[in-house]
Image (cartoon, rainbow, N blue to C red; front, side):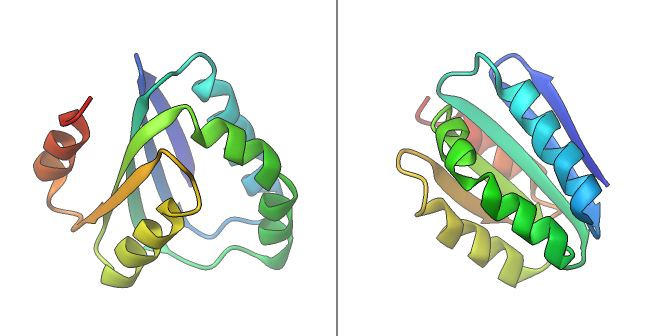
Length: 122
């Protein structure tokens, strides 16, 4: 499951389960479409039950990395809500790949803290 909802200059993203190449294609297309026109935006990314994507899904994501780098420049902050500490930490490391984007992980039950952090510095 991958769902993107746009509210003004903000995206709410929900992810759970396992993505195959077809689901990854739909997810990346939806993210791309909903990102159009956003500048200095924010994202709240909710990670539910996490299962590693299929090899085909990973290959598709890597093939679109150049385009994703451009899209990520539209955002200044991303809060990741996840129960698993390792997902939060990996997300923060991933943020270092995108200049100008700060990613911070929060426990899944800390949505109010994540939203407050997203609102800061903007």
